[in-house]
Structure formats: C-alpha cells, structure tokens
Length: 61
Image (cartoon, rainbow, N blue to C red; front, side, top):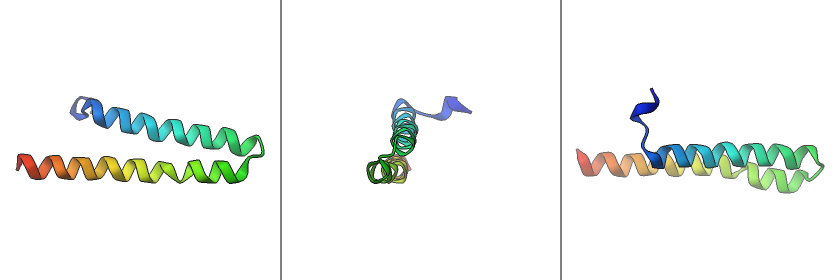
C-alpha cells in the first residue's frame, strides 16, 4: 500500500501528523488558542497534498 506513495506524499503526511500532535500537546498544556491555530494546519496540508496529486495526474494523463 505504501509503495504507491512518493516521497512528497510521505513528507506531507508526516507534516500533517506532526502538526496534529503538536496541536494536541499545546491544547493539553492550556494553550488552547495556539492549539486551535496549529490544528487548522492539518486539513490545509492535506488539501495541498491532494492539489499536488491532481496537478501531477493532469500532467501525466
């Protein structure tokens, strides 16, 4: 399953997971506003990854 992922896919997924974890750490330390701000990065990072996939597919197809 993971063989179809490129290095870019893996890095974007790692960035999304790390921002989610960092957001949760901040939330439980009481920094709720900062945690919400960083938590909003997760869907943005994943959407950017989807955008890159779509651009790559249109160039190849």
